[in-house]
Image (cartoon, rainbow, N blue to C red; front, side, top):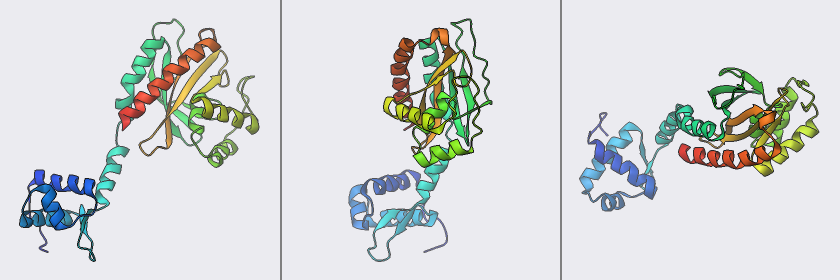
Length: 252
């Protein structure tokens, strides 16, 4: 093969890639039939894609297939995807619908980091949290929401490496009690922070997986206990679970 790119027709090149993505490994004759192009044209297209590293040819069968270079490109694209661009409209809608402050966090080691906050101006009492601040996983709703999607070994590892402190009278400091709560989260689909991190504040939270399905993000509704009765929590649970479903669908 010549050490140069033999063709520059972008639309046909992408058509070959899309066809191979649908068919899987294919012989030259099969590709000609799918593409409705003559043999010499398809061969030049394939030669170009092999040159660029997007297609490979099996030495034994002679069939052509996509290489892992496309997967590498896809992974790079997804890693740079601005998650906030996706979730922001949903979180704004959630805050407007509930009249409460909504937080969005990202997992970072033993903590969750606030990366977005949608402040509600419908109520006079404001949440003091700030974007960029951190909150431990073991005593937060967002932390428990993400932990519930992790294997038990990872949950235990996070607990063992966290500096467990009784921040309020409601903070859980025993792993058995904490893990029981995690199992409740797994059953219900959402997590609560019952004044475990800050007295006077209750939160309801759900996790959002990254594009590989790993627990990496979560969002929560936070409000003073006076506005977060058990009945209100039950109402909000249906709303946050619905918003989660919409966000996950939008990320696909």
